[in-house]
Image 1 (cartoon, rainbow, N blue to C red):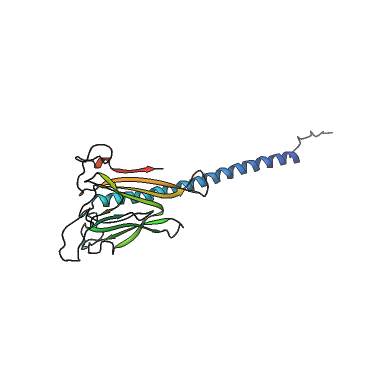
Image 2: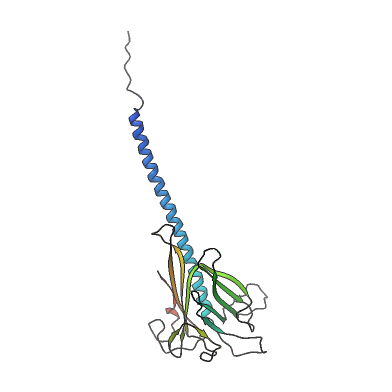
Length: 251
């Protein structure tokens, strides 16, 4: 007679099943928490990159156009040609309109030169309540209405403020406003322009909250009168100082 050997016990007890399910549940919760945090961080970083991009484009464009700002006494026919440089303190977002030699022709054969009329101002943000959209107007031809005509497009959204100051080359003082049509500043350009742009962006420390991001820059006007004073805290304005200018982030 052949005796069968007993095989080891197969299967799991109820307690072992419960313990295994508990371990899997903990691993699942930890995994979902890690994935959620990673996706949230990625979203915040993407929004911060968007804020940085808005600021880079805005400050770069302002720097380029302001550097080539100019004024002309010439008026071929009355009420047909006028260049101005006017900056107004208009509250949270300052307004600036000026003539510049920064225009670029997009189409071959277009009857346009490098002269252009530019206006920078703020209007209510159509997406974000309580904030502003920074708008840019550029007219390919200069006429007797330096604040009208041309193409309008947004430079940045979620704008909290834009402050612009102007360096008077005669007094070496920073002014909050400038008007080349006024008696005090008639047909004069500031030597330098300083702008501070504040955008609202995500707060990485507080979910669903916004915080201000501030960007500052200073540019020297190529056709402005030289000033016998320091602009960037280094050499005075008698030599080449373009290498010192630029934009910085102030958080």
